[in-house]
Image (cartoon, rainbow over all chains, first blue to last red; front, side, top):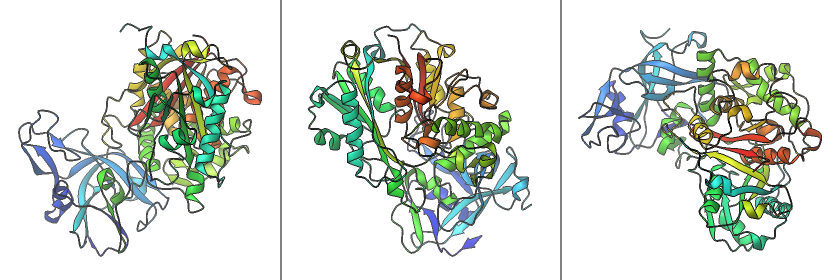
Length: 144
Length: 407
């Protein structure tokens, strides 16, 4: 998906978050990971809280997740969102409690279930400060 | 764990309470409302402003979101010409009552004797007719332009997905609770219906007309499962307390409301989406700590005044405070009888923030004091309460107090 921005909300890119927001260029969901103990750090921080290691590097995960919760939002809080839309919390399969706030897409509302298997799909937003790829999630196996 | 009789709570009491006019959009100077509440609290205690030697407020000086702060600590210290030995404000604290808890610590630590605490909001006027602000107090989008809004800080993980604030974040928790425990919308509605029944007896409440279950289900969905009546109503108004050293409080104008225990803990990530368990709140940690500081137990609670920024937060707090079992808040409030004014556990007897206005945490302690003193008038709980559980906040910012009529 590539979109020319009309009114969009995009993350402000920094050296700390770029790996996450631009991983989608290669179709990858990328988290900072401790190279010593294997713990994924989200949001990214400079020292691993498990072993105090600073030996951290961005690493791609599978992009698979389980739906932890969702809400169908009907209120126009922000410009540029077509109503209703689904805000979701997904748990990344690689690490319990590693969650993302995201959107469930390509799925009829009545088929959304907590626990359902999802896979990442990226929404590309062009931006003069650097393109970003928002990680959204669709049912595993593709569009329903 | 042994219970310390010399804990700071045991050295303190609420000696005075005050509240300004409250309205949907009063269009008045928020500092005037703040001072109305502060002077009222000082007078209620039978004190003079010159007796006040401490000041505490939540959240202090903040420019955003609009109307979130009616006055900062310095505004009130200066306007009342207070000479304080201790003062504090801040938003990173255990809920809105964190400011009261800090006052208790200051008295316990010997820094002050009479601490004025206040919370002031003017969100009703500030948001005008353009609808509710969408962003929480934790930070908003950076400068936009060209149709693009740039989100930094923690909002970068939320706003690009339209996860625009607490209604959505709380809805995600509520949906998880419904899924795991079978909690229903009919049960959730009871928090709103109970609040409205009580608001009908509160002349200061914003919404006082009767609300039926049918009205509830006919109200528009904001974000599933939350409907309009599950969300509190922004207002203008201020609430203030004087927290006094206990031995001084005994000789003042009103019977003291004693502070028995407080809870401040957070044993989870201070995050909205990285919590270990989506069906629990950090209020669980604060409440467990509170119960560990007193010989009273949840069975001793006569009345609960619990944060209802969203109806579901009250349900979560009922579980956190151990007033019902984990996951059992739905059946606990079912039908509304138990939580009614003449029920086993009267709840939010002034109408809560859902119907009486989003006084943001302080309204609950105010109403607990009104009821414990027996000053509730038409809405006084028929079986005079002696012990009240008071809780404020939700998500990653929670604090609670146990207050009593007996020392």
